Amino acid sequence: MKLKLHLALILTLLLGGVATVEAQTQKWAASWAASAHGPYPSGNASAQPVLDFAIESAETGANDQSFRLIVRPTLWGKRVRLRFSNAFGTRAVTFDDVFVGLQSSAGNVAAGTNTRVLFGGKPNLTIPPGQVVFSDAVNLSFVKNADDALLTGRKLAVSFHVVGNSGPMTWHAKALQTSYLSAPRTGSHVNEDSDSRFPYSTTSWFFLDVVEVMAPADAFVVACFGDSITDGTLSTLNGDDRWPDVLAQRLRAAYGNRVAVINAGIGGNQIIGPAKYSPTAPVPGGPSALDRLERDVLSLGGVTHIIWLEGINDLSRGASAEAVIAGMQEVVKRVRARKIKIIGATITSGLGNNGNAGTAEVNERRQTINRFIRTSGLFDGVADFDAATVDAKTEALRAEFQPNSTVGGAGDKLHPNRAGYQAMANAIDLKLLLPTGKKK
Image (cartoon, rainbow, N blue to C red; front, side):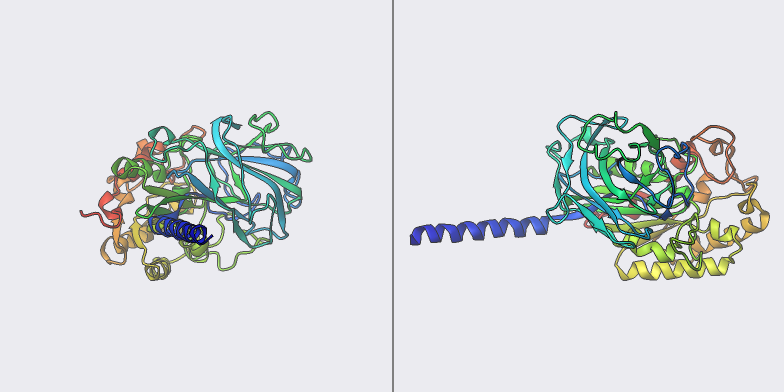
């Protein structure tokens, strides 16, 4: 009897030691994110189909129907957890089925990979208005080796069923990624591999705002914080060629599967405006960078660096260069308090755009801010996106960076296209993003 007790004690100590070692050698790291910015349909979607048949009204939201969202992790792990958001809902929303699997094509899930997600050990989840909730950890059986090069670029299909009416839906409008919805009042189809019950498509993400993976302790996460130019306006639909995507490719080539790049951009976002934001009085660009910094960046696992490109929307709405700079200083202060490095990106030109961003007066204020970013020493480094994209003769966006890569056409002289985003990402000195322990 004593021998059995001793063996049991030894086994307990050993298992406890293993758990301690795992806790010391692994951590949760954000692998994908999409900043929720308001209730549907407020926002700036790109190439969005008419959703009247899939979503009957903004007030009632989803109605006993299933969503299948397609997302691309930039860091792989054998275990994941998902964060769902009702940040801009006005009533509680309930999901009774949530699954995650490997996308095979369109809205189809690779056979044998669709796995149920639990919340506190239960399959159902109710999120009060204004709240976000993480799932339990989920083992991805199809990930045998997180470093497998064949996983690079593959996407997850996250499926969930909304019980009854959701009310106003928290969303990210400009996904530039096709996802899928079932018809209203058709029940749960999330455990089905086929996309046959998901006839409607959308280029937005709803409710889901973060995917984190259990990663090695030395993994690092770069958050790209900003407005529509970070969100990817005019990039290729389903092409994953926004500047954060191209940066992720460069970093993965340098450091392998130990770095994630998340996109915390929102089309129309401002640094210091709007002064007030609420779900009942939304603004397309969402809450200000000052207001959303904690939820969209600082609360995410493993963030070590931020690259911040923002300000043109403030200037377009009449903000002074001094007010924008003061907002930048406040954000940097908050970031530094968390011991996170922040890289300042110069604001790209909108000269010639048919909106306020295209005026000479806004361009003059933009250049004042860029001089501050380059020379003040406020930031831990500078990504000179303006120098990488501007035509020195005209001070406008270079001609080859203007044609619209999303839907075709001439572009708007404000948002770069695929080629422009590549130039921006390639202008970033990777030495600014050195992981802990690496030497220059």
